[in-house]
Length: 238
Image 1 (cartoon, helix red, strand yellow):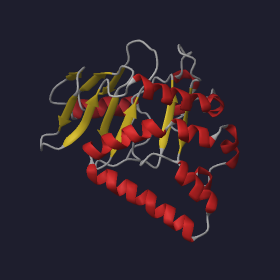
Image 2: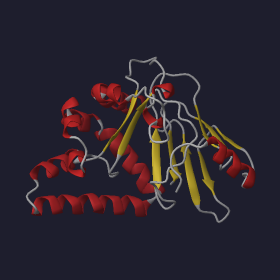
Image 3: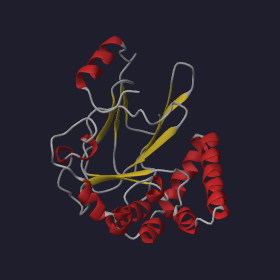
Image 4: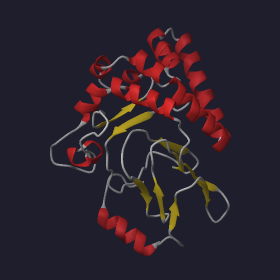
């Protein structure tokens, strides 16, 4: 449950618990642990150009909050995700930045002013096909998580209707994804870090689009390094 980045700690753990082997992924692959449990799906070329264009359109709608997310003050363990040192000039017109989204974001105690920076309805419309593709993939990769996520969203919608929370119901109806949170990252080179907010039983799904050169995703604690071309989908255990 460690947060943030700590290179010394990372090196210490890797020396104590080195991976059994080094794996390089460049073709569709499923990775299992020693008990035969799937911990990673690697699916390059999953997202066709039309859906990548939808994702690009949705990201363009978020240009103002993306630009405002970048910080330049001294980096700390809590600020590294948005620190300017991790962003690079765009090669394809995207605005560098990193933001988190979820339905009814303001009802969770986040500033309402953020909502005024983009067209929520247009964003959700642009994300309908990408969200449907990701949901279909999740239903194959992790049926239990798919159905439980869908049931949670439906239950939340019924609760909002019962409590006459019309605005929350509108946001939930616009939100096409079965996931309750979405992170948009543009032109980011992430330092090694851990994600203590997820669970081993969950899958986080990462997708990529754009016109860029060679990119790689590294998971050194698993001994995995994968080519990460545009149109890839990687689902990993939390």
